[in-house]
Amino acid sequence: MPTWITYTLVRIGLFAALFVVLMLVGLEGWLAAILAALIAFLVSYIFFRGMRARVAAELAESRATTDKTPDEVAEDER
Image 1 (cartoon, rainbow, N blue to C red):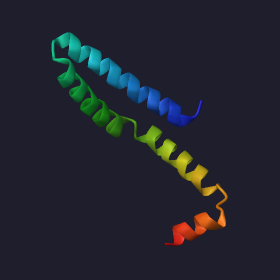
Image 2 (tube, one colour):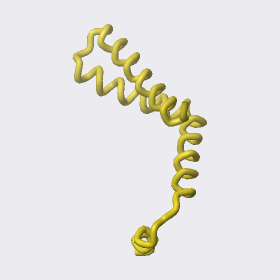
Image 3 (cartoon, rainbow, N blue to C red):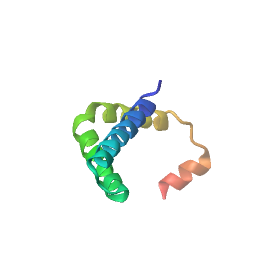
Image 4 (tube, helix red, strand yellow):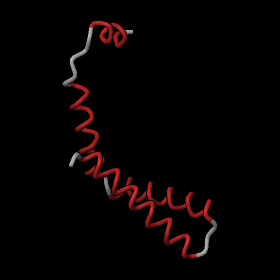
C-alpha cells in the first residue's frame, strides 16, 4: 500500500477516535469536530514526522520523474 494512503488512513482514524471520545465526554458536535481536528493535526505533526517525510519524498520523486512537455517547461520558466 502506498505510504500516502497509510498516512491518510492514520490521520482519519486519529480524528475519528478523538471525535468519538469528545462526543462521549459530552461536547457538542461542532465543538468536538473542531477540537478533534486540531488535536489530530497536532499529534500527527509531532509524532508522525517520519511518515510525513516519506510521503513528501515519494511525491517529490514522482514529480521529478515526470516527463514535461515543451508547454509545461515554458510555463515553469515564467
